[in-house]
Length: 233
Image (cartoon, rainbow, N blue to C red; front, side, top):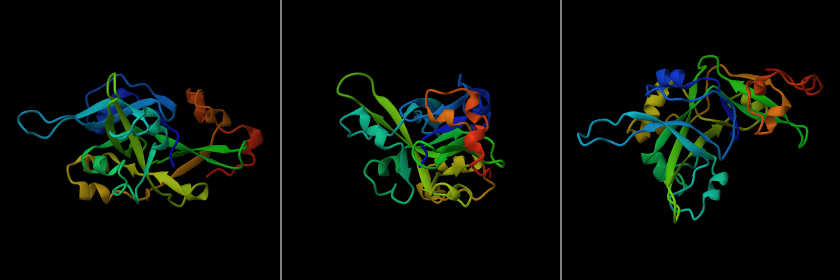
């Protein structure tokens, strides 16, 4: 599962890494479900039928299928399991036609008993700026403007993440992001596995467990009381 992540890169870095027009995107250190976050997707084709350009859009985290009756459904669909994403009615059409990438520099996971959980920041030295494999949908309420939402695809954890949790997001390098956004759905599905490169995990402050705590201090080292009980990887 992935329920929090961070993006320690601004719009210029995102634009350069994923070949999209520059946008006013701020660094974020505690992105949580139901919040709007930057997503890269293909824009609509023009009349010439040429390959559509990429666009950077702010979408709500928590996919809401077009047939859902209410926006709140999205809170149950912040992640899509790679093993069943092609079968689930909420995700299968998006997997074929509405894949997106979610820029990130790391994500968080927790270990420990309820009330004493220690958060860890997980990063990838070989890919300091990467993307999660994502899917997006457009939901139209009975009245008002449509809402675009997204989900993050998850897979089995690799060895490092597996020491504290059995799942992790599908991590894409910029080159793999090109494949994920391409029309070739078969090639895209082949990417749905655990990240095989170097993975770093570091205990961070428990204050970041509160989604309202959003500054770069989210990545501060764990407090001594808890950090001394938490193995650093």
